[in-house]
Length: 98
Image (cartoon, rainbow, N blue to C red; front, top):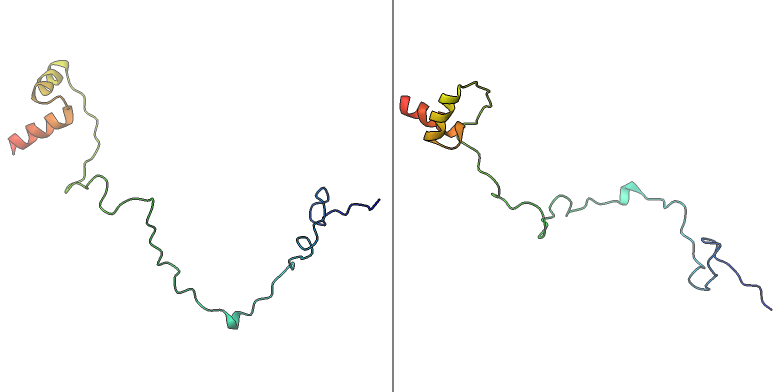
């Protein structure tokens, strides 16, 4: 009976002639003088995925700042009468005063 041979790469796998006969070199010597720049590097435009140009929220002409204020309940009730959003109600009051 012939003894079964095993692959050098995986000792548990059987040896397959022709498929397991080659070995890759540990290092491939490259000559930098023969190298060329990649003309396509940095030019790739992906057709799928990513964000569309111009998508998302548009920036405001004047950026908003966050501030904390303290109000009485009666003042809050008055502002909610102008607008459900307190920030929008305060902006409306300031616009009327200007």
